[in-house]
Length: 263
Image (cartoon, rainbow, N blue to C red; front, side, top):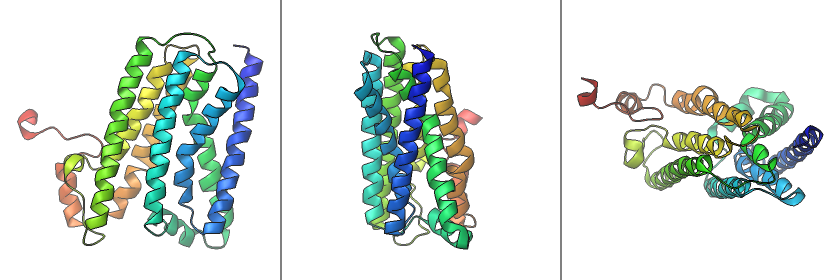
């Protein structure tokens, strides 16, 4: 693929995503809730897929990648949209609203919407790499990646469904979900998300520039384990004795070894 065309693609995709982020920033101002950024997250990938679908012929692998990303994005955005309808602004965004004070609007634009746009461009690497290869049938790595993606998608979907059902019936905000998939994993929805993006990487790993897509699952893994995922939710339950007991029994992203295996 011509490198000038590749740079042109990156430039146009960046413009598209940053314009998209600004639209959602305006929506957040109108609704007075920044958690609409969570809805925007998944749908942004559809724009990138749409860009390549509209501008060039695609390989068989690209159609698998874009189909998988569309299913993931629509499911996630729909889930978050329905969750948003039923509650007030997410606690993380409410805290920032208080902490940022008079600089709230500027910091919201920079630290929520512009930063999310930048991260989205990085995580979308498998979609971009797939769009750069106009020919070629799917092979072993495409199938292997789809298998990994399917496992992650099912885990994330079931975990979100169990959590949504629990939130409708719990008696107080300190009550903790400890049944189903959540019995042995404290954040199975994040586990599923990480697996999804490793699957996306494997799907394009054999393509030219496929190595560059490795940045996608690495960034997602670091974000969810070190920055905005597990750490923020774990901090919310500090001092909760039930949660401390839960942490000793259940792993953060993967089940802890049972006692018989650890002996």
